[in-house]
Length: 125
Image (cartoon, rainbow, N blue to C red):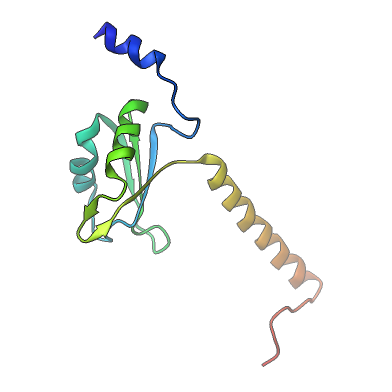
C-alpha cells in the first residue's frame, strides 16, 4: 500500500487531468444508477450529475475521489458504447465553462444596449 502511494506520488500527470470528468453523447434516458454502474468500476465516486434540462441532456459530470481513478476512467471509457452511442469523456475545464458564461453575459449586455439605443440588427422582413 505504501509502495503504491510512493509510486503515484512520483508519476507526473498532464495539467488538464483532474478528478472531474465531463461526459457527452449519453443516452437521454440514462439514470444516475446506470452511470454509477459504468463509472464506478474505475474507483470510488464522490458525485454524479446527469443533465436534465433541454440544453444539458445527454451530458453528465462524474467526480472521483482520486485523480488516478478519474484518469483511468477517462482513458478507458472514451469511445465506450452505451445504447449504440459512443461516449465522449473529457476532463472538466473550469476556464472553458467560465468563458461560456462570460460570452452569454456579454451577449445579454449587448442586447440590452441595443434595446436601450434603439438599434435593430434583425434583417427587414
